[in-house]
Image (cartoon, rainbow, N blue to C red):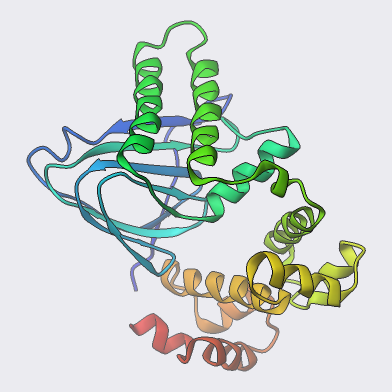
Length: 278
């Protein structure tokens, strides 16, 4: 079985890596197809005009004019863009850009938690101009251009927050703070800890309180959120590696591979082998 490529920057810059590509020339005479792969960096795709298909972590999105896609490191995707389109691909790693202020960190995480944004023409054009400014800075490489790009990235994410109506006051609520911490802990600990009790204790709240907040903010119980994280990573490993089922089970913290198989089938209606063969 062929492994899914993990794309990384070829050259490691001492202060982080960044790249921006204007798609107009690449799409002028032919379509673009990128077979299924994943990155170890952040990825933005802005489509001003054009069509195609985008599969992100097993969800299908039809590409339309004025669409924006945001991917976190580790997400699996496959991309097909039709000939004649226009837009940008922009990538950066956490060492190059990551907000430091608490409010900006929360907003940044929230923006990237959603992969697809459909904008109107006026809103998109404002954001698209920021992409052009970033391209110019990166092309000219004048003194301080990397700092200027980081400043424009701050502006880009602020513009998207405004256009999509994300409330900074709401983001600063106690419940959202709990969800942010829960999400962060889950990313780090899901292989070892798969029960809400562990995360509730770490957050110094009761399990019932964690469930209540999860339902309020995300519309799911904390158990459902944990299960979805485990299943998603299982799917990624089934497609992205040639590891045996028992090896994936061990990697995800299951001591018994037969239990992992039952767990996976219960939540997907497929055995791991059936899912991989599809």
